Every structure is written in structure tokens, then in C-alpha cells.
Amino acid sequence: MKKKNLTIIIILSAVVLILGVFLIYNYKKAKEKEAEIAEIVEMMNFEKEQLEKDYSDLALEYDTYSSKISNDSLVQLLQKEKMKVQQLLEELKITKATNAKRIAELKNELTVLRAVMANYVHQIDSLNAANKLLRTENIKVKQKYEQVNETVKQLAKEKETMKEVITRASMLEITNFSMTPLDSKNRSTKRYSKIITLQFNYTIGKNPTTQPGNKTLYLRITQPDEEVLVKDPNDLFPYEDKQIAYSAKKDFEYSGEAISDVIYWKVDRVLQIGTYRADFFVDGFRIGSFTFEIKK
Image (cartoon, rainbow, N blue to C red; front, side):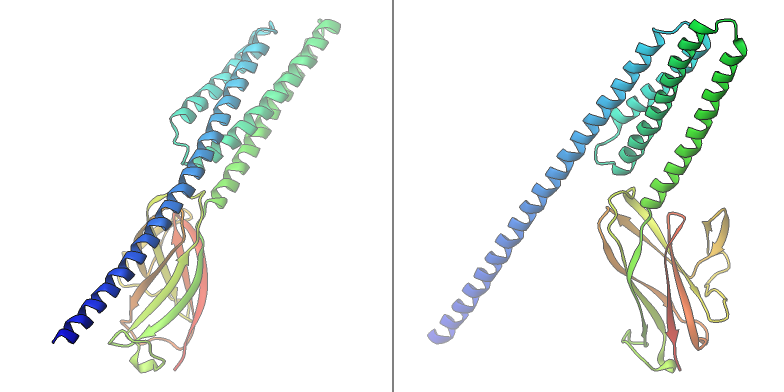
């Protein structure tokens, strides 16, 4: 009996020791993660502070140039651009430094505004020189204004292009895709007649520029004959200004880090033999397209 009790004590001690080592290891890992996150947040705060300073400096430049010219129309244009700078500066002040997507957008906005300012400065210098030498040639002054307006329109187009680039950069991406046929006991099977469920394994990649939060993933399965597998004709979601059918959907919370998950489709018909396509959609974008085989 004593020998049995001793054995139990030894086993319990070993379990406690292992548990203690495991807890210490997890504690250290958590601390390291906290330090890493704190460093990233600090860098984001610094970047935001620098961006606020850049916006403030640009607003001051508009004040400086407005005071140097007497042309009322140009002053109004400068004041309008200055108000836009100030509005974005106020938005920046209340935007969290960790909102990487909006900070990046505001940084690109600043690039566009600086380009507008550079063009205005060029126009101001040109107009001042023209006014000194050709005060009676009003038609040339009008042409200069038209050139400024055309430049602003061009910059607006470039701004839209920048927005498209930012949007593309913030898109999620599916990797590590695979499809596993399951039988009635949820076991992997290669027998065509035993397939009850299609299990789709995937990973949503890491993307710190994507807006975090609750999202919905839509899976659209297309048969070899191009027919989409659907459970209900009302299972639709918006994509490229229209409503299209989906096979299955899954809600998830995205924090910017990679997520590995699965989604299932219950077989409710005789499956066709051949090549299928699985398309994944999130936030109105197709983020992955893959093919898989159903063999007899």
C-alpha cells in the first residue's frame, strides 16, 4: 500500500511540475507578444503624430501664400483647399493610430494635397510674373486659371487611382486550400458513393491594411456543367453591382492576423464527375478561386 501511495505522489508531482513549466512558458510568450504589440502601437502613434504635423505645416503654407496674392478668385481656391486640409487634419486627430487602413488613406490624401499645393505655387509665381510684365493681357491670365483647373481635375483622377490601389492592397487572400470528401461518420473517404459532405479547408492570410471586424465569407461551388450548387434560390450576396448565388457562408471576426478555418457543404444531389470550382468572397471581392476533382 505504501509503495502504491508513493507511486501516486510521484506521478502527481510530475504532473504539477509539467503544468508549472507549461504555465511559465505561456506566461513568457504572452509577455513577449505584449511587448511586440506595444512597440507596433508606439510606432503607429509616432507615424500619426508626424502625419498631423505634416498636415498642420501644409495648412500654414496655404495661409502664407494667401497673404501674398491679391487675386480674389485664387485666394478663394486656396482657402477652399486649406479647408479641405483642416477637415482631414481634424479627422486624423480623432482617428486611432491603430487604424492602419485610414492612416494610409490620409497619408495618400496628403500626397495629393501637396501636389495640388505645388501646382498652385507654380501658378501663383507664374501669374505674379505675368502681372508685372503683361497686366493688360487678361486672356493669358484666364488661360492660366484654366490650366490650374485642368491640373486639379487630373489630380482628382490620380487620387481615385490611388484609392483603387489602396483598396486592392487591403483585400484579403485565401491560401492553403484543400477539399476533403467526408462520409456519414465525417471520415475522409475516396469512395464516390459514400460522399455525404464536402469539407473545404482554407487559410485567410494576414493583412494589417484590412479593416478589422466582423466579416462574412461566401463560398460559391460551381459544377463541371457551370451550374452553381445552392440550397435556396434566395441565397444571394452582392458582387460587382449585382446579386449572385452562393453555396455556403460563414461569419468570422478578422483582426489582421491569418485565420485557418473550414466550411462545409452537405451533398443533397448526385454529384457530377469532373472538375469543380470553389470561389471565395469577402467584402465584395473574390479573394480566392480554386479547382478540385470529384472522381468515381
